[in-house]
Length: 159
Image (cartoon, rainbow, N blue to C red; front, side, top):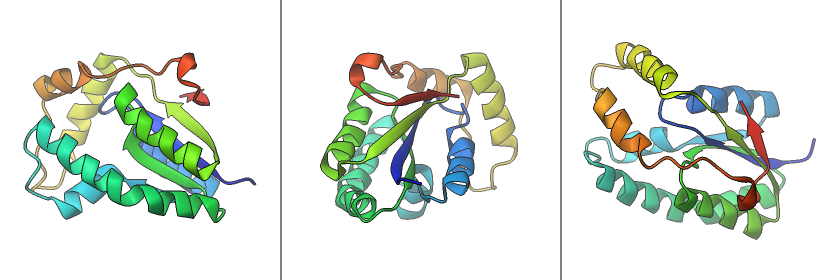
């Protein structure tokens, strides 16, 4: 099996992380989760969208060369990092171009209603110290969501 880069696009609570875990297992791939990295490195610093953008950018800058090296050395990688805006997808394009690797972007397409229901379920099962994400936050973040389009030249798989 040829190595690839796999990554996700989809609204908050669409099921990207759950799917990423299953895909990594199925493809015997290295899995990296932005949420897990942010939680461990910056457990209390992310309070706003601006904070998220700042810390996410730091992580992506630090990881990019390592990811390219992993891919060039024949590893498949599943990135549970959002590809939810055109700007976010540029980072994936850079990795694909520099590593000269094949890729698949999984678009986990779910309605707002389904995502909000899944968000409620997720909030019930969160560890005690984890902040809850309410519908207002979902609505605010979803305003930024941009569906991927064919002219972006990604190999899009729909889930």
